[in-house]
Image (cartoon, rainbow, N blue to C red; front, side, top):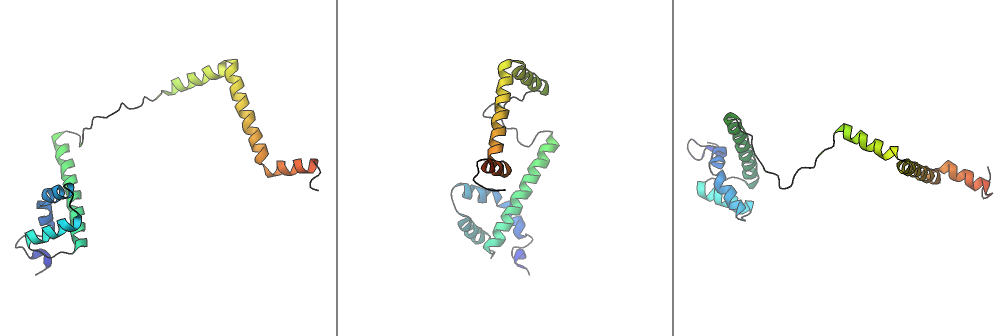
Length: 145
């Protein structure tokens, strides 16, 4: 007889699934997995390795979540109806983005800002471009071609 059949007619997976609420309440209460594992083995009189218990616990939680989703779908509800703590940020419509961009560029100050940003970016690129650096050093006579 295999280890999972020590208890007549019940598998280890079934034992973990039936004890899942107790296990989770103990873990929520602060007990470690090792303590819960020892409690589980003592309660059901089975010998299971810790790794096997953790694997069975993972599978039981996964199955419970699937069942919860299935029940919610059958009832016509969403799985979790969560009320947000803060309002979600409002997204601008594409037409609002285009109009805001037009407003910025339609004024002379907006055009000057964009032009000055572009010039500053171009100057930064020229400073970091190795070819431009070599050309400047050649003009200054610091290096020969």
